[in-house]
Image 1 (cartoon, rainbow, N blue to C red):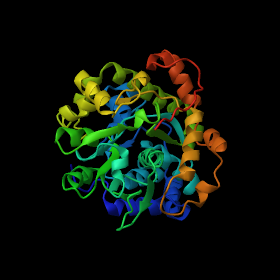
Image 2 (tube, helix red, strand yellow):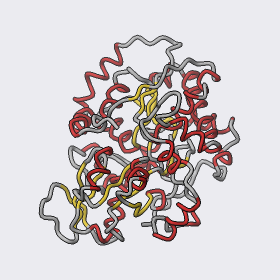
Image 3 (cartoon, rainbow, N blue to C red):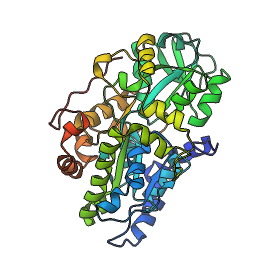
Length: 394
């Protein structure tokens, strides 16, 4: 993969961008941008499995089937570039990490709403082969992709549950501490191989890549800690939701249909996303993507034996797809963010009410309509009803 992806420079840029002052020039550019009523879908994405529904919707012509035009998705080189392109209006449909959505709306005042979940689970904690338990990470360094990520939240929950304290920028790490560092996902596998870090927690397919290359092993899947948690969510501009409601509904319809198709065609999806697919959406091999989207039964048996999966009864997929944004998740997300070690200005977070965020951050009217038209929540293997209780077991 191109080493420009997720560089340290871009991480610093994103941190500056997700402030009210840093975002203002791009928001002004968006406001000044003329928008035609029939402006096409312009997807911005990163080459990770988190982007799957957006790419499937494009590849399968689902936007056109809804009666709207769609340009070829734009592959961007970092979260910073993705957020910048969205805020300025260069793209109008994106997937972002759910905590980034919180930061964007309340930290940098971006007038955007979560309209759907893009996928659930899809991440893991991968460690060196000499690590047998979370407790073995004491005194060592673990890499995360960004402070505002589900990965950072879940990792810190795991560490605290095992008597370990997360710290940052420490050279002399105590036996009961774990040093957290931001690392570009493509750099995580070689860093683990070189024993520069003891492990990393990140989105797929980087965990599968570590396994396939024989560099590390999955210690825990994040979906086995927080049941059916969202990772990436779909963001749309409020302007589109208000001024182009019919267009917005069709966008969400296509994404929901893409998720239904993906769940029923996992192997085909791996081929579609791979570097050998006709659109070359990602630089990943079919082998690595299949390990994520359609893991072999022997893989599952191995994860149960090793303890990477502790909750067999949850029937979690390595990555799964369902679009409804449960309010209980957003509330719990904000609550956990408040107690998560995060570098940088977090004043907006300390003042944010979880219940308010659940209502204000998400507009679920479009996705409810789309789900109802596509077989209801049962089409995603879920019970009907738009409420659930969050289950987090470390």
